[in-house]
Length: 474
Image (spheres, helix red, strand yellow):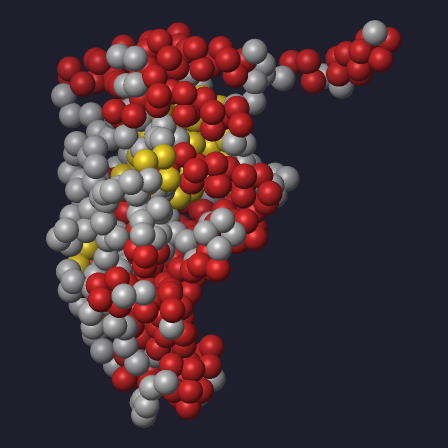
C-alpha cells in the first residue's frame, strides 16, 4: 500500500494524472464527398452523434483533383474550409488525408474525383531522368501511368516510376495546405499521405482498368510501362554489374541491356511457380517490391518537407492494405495477390511463418520505424481488422492471421500501428466487432478508424462502437 501511495504521488507530481483515460485512438472515416444540402445536413447531425459516442477524430480525404483541378498551383480550399469548420464545431479532431489518388473505381467509392488532368501533359517536354536511351524520347501521358501485364493503363495514381517528376507537385500541395490551415494545427490529430490507389501503399494490381483481377484473384503486375522497364534494366545491371553476370545468373544470352524484359506471359510465369523458383523470378519480385518501398520512403520524406513549419510536430501516417486472399492458396498461388500488389517481399518463401522478415511485411512496416522521431511519429494504418480467417476456396483467406502478423511485427519494430475495417459491411455483425476488439486488445493495435461516418452512427455500430470505447477505457 505504501508503494502504491508513493507511485500515485509521483504520478501526480509529474503531472501525468491529467493524461487521457486511454491512449487508443477511436476515429471514424468521413464521407468521400458532400454534394447536396441534405448530405451536409446529415453530415453535421452525424458528427454530433459521433461526438456523443466517444469518437475522437474524423478522417477527411483532401482530394488533389478537387483542390488543384484548374491548373498548377491554382488551389481552391473552399470545400475544406466548410468541412473542417463543421468537424471542429462538433468538438472533434481532424485527420486530413493528402489524397493524391483518384476517387472512383474502388470498392465503396461513391464519388468521381480524378487526379488533376493537367498532370498527364505537364512533363511531355522533359526527359525521364532514366537511362541514356530514354533521354531523347518525349514522354507521353501514358508514360506517367502504371501499365499492367495485360497492357492496360491506370490513371488512378501517377506511376511511382515518375516520382522524380511528380513529387515536387506533392510537396507544393502539402506546403500550400499547411500555409492555408496553419491556424488549425491544434485541430489536426495526424496527417495521412496517399501512396497509391485508394490511398494505399500498393500497386493498382486489382483495380478496374484490368479484367478479371479483382478479389479473390492474384491480380496483375503493374510494371510494364516505359519508365518501369527502363528502371528494371538499370536496377538489374546495378545488381550484377555486367551483362555477362546477368546471363550467368539467369542462364540467358543477352547482348544488349535493352533486351532485358519482363515475362511475356506473366500468368503462366506465376501459376507454374517460376516467379518463386528461379533467380530471374526472384529478382523481378525483389525489384518490384523494393520499388514500392522506395516510393513510400520518398513520400514520407516529401511530407516531412511539405509539413515543416506549423505542422512540423504533427504525426504522419500511411496505409498498407490487408490483402488477405490467396494467403492459404495451394501450390504456387499462395500469397500471389500480395506479391502482385507489391506489399510483401518474396523472402517469406523459405517459411510461410517466417517471423524474421515479418512474414514479408518487414520493409513496409520499417518505413514508419525509419522515419519516426521523438518530435514526430510516423504511424502505420492497416486494414481488414474485422475479418476472420477463411482458408478455403475461393478466397483462401487468412485475414485475422494477417492482422496479427502485422501487429506483432509493428510491435517488434517499435512502430505504432492503427487499424481499419476493410468493408463497411464488416461492422454489421458481432463477429466483425469481436475481431476488431481482439486486434486492439491482443495484437498491439493502438487505434481504430471505422468506415464510414454514416455507417457508424446507424445500425449495429451505433451500439457496438461505444461498447468498444468503454472497454478500452476500463
